[in-house]
Image (cartoon, rainbow, N blue to C red):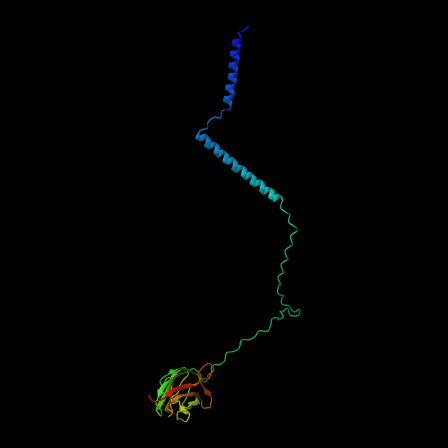
Length: 232
């Protein structure tokens, strides 16, 4: 039989061994920096994967619970293009019958007038010229014969309105003026009034048959005289 002291020693050694092994199993080993970084990266990747999976699951769930579309209204049928009716054909001759609307003919341009002219400007005594009371002067204009008829010596300048300035209201056109020709027309021996003031006078061309013509859009304007009578 063994010694009791020896048995007690063996028991104490066994208990100590069990305690030591138990303590060693609960000790957490210290990780290196590299091992810790790998674990952190793995944890982040796992979390990101989990979030992606959760988002995908939520989207699939949302789509699965979408309300079904009711019967959609049908689109209106597009209008049928209207084809122009064919021109009817007569049975007897086989010729097309004319059904088109009546064609309106363009108006014929008015023929160029025989007697007309353009005013090109004042040669002297422009509007507002100061003339002494009782002074004698000659007024001259430059014009162009834009009509189709020539002006002969039988054509005159006649007063169409305003002051006569001491004339008999008529002045001769001395030279023949052909269509397209530019000429200066004058009224000599005009006499200014004695009373100071502003005076006007208008003159037109007259043909041997008595027809009168001026210039402007409707040949309605006479060649004008405007003077200021006063003593300076």
